[in-house]
Image 1 (cartoon, rainbow, N blue to C red):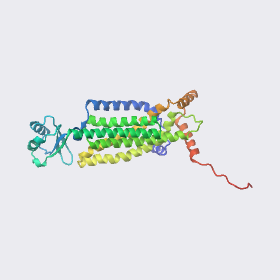
Image 2 (cartoon, helix red, strand yellow):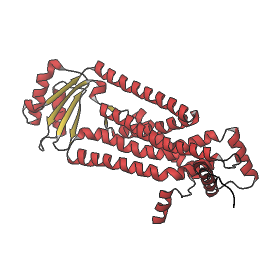
Image 3 (cartoon, one colour):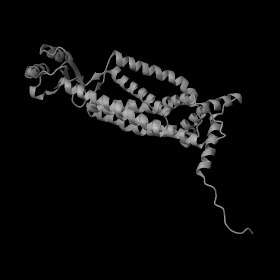
Image 4 (cartoon, helix red, strand yellow):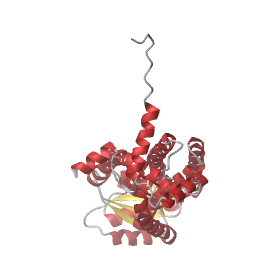
Length: 351
């Protein structure tokens, strides 16, 4: 184990990512399909900021059952209400209605207070109009579209359109899984959750750009007579950056996990849960997709270019394809020639 870690830290590991990606892609496609089905079939549990309506939060006593609050809400005229019991530092019942009912506010509060055996003053109320919810949802969609457009433009200018497309495919993979988790478990989606979605897209792109940058540098290091296929070039690049991706993910996941465990579960700050779950799932999915989705997708596109088709045909004619170790050796030699300048000549008379 120590030997493997030492090789990973030095970038000397010789794992065949491309062969593994063929099998891993089936599992990724299955997970994304399940998440998409959950999003379509179950939908998202959108917060009041998106749908509009009214929310009443009532201190929960141990002797009061959830069914009692549901019956009280129904008797008060809240026929479309949803009642949740939220546990944390202080347990509360959250009653949510799909419309603002300001004219019945006092009677609803009185009925809920009686059912929960608490004072009416202890019940907090929030109301959001449907038009405001539509504005928030529209701004979130526009922010997502602008973000994707700018990223696609930047990656196209920085690398090429194939890598821009590969990055967008990886982002779709990460978002589908993260949003799918929210749909499967019906976790409430709030503006904080949308911010988390945009944040994990940034983390995912960072990991993906690191891989793409390494592949581009390795390509530049190749000599004109090199016979390396793009598949081997991608393998070498992934082996060189895997430890960096793992370290980045660990240092990002640990604070988020502590935020979720300490802040949400122990201290009872349930608002942190909506943010932390998206970050945790997205960070893990982003690290995975940069290695097993983005680069393999780009490899499939690059292998259709005439130059790399010729390299593959030449490798097939030789009867054996360049191994990762041979590719790494050639790349190392190319980088050495690029980075080491020739020794200056001594000027003077020869003795």
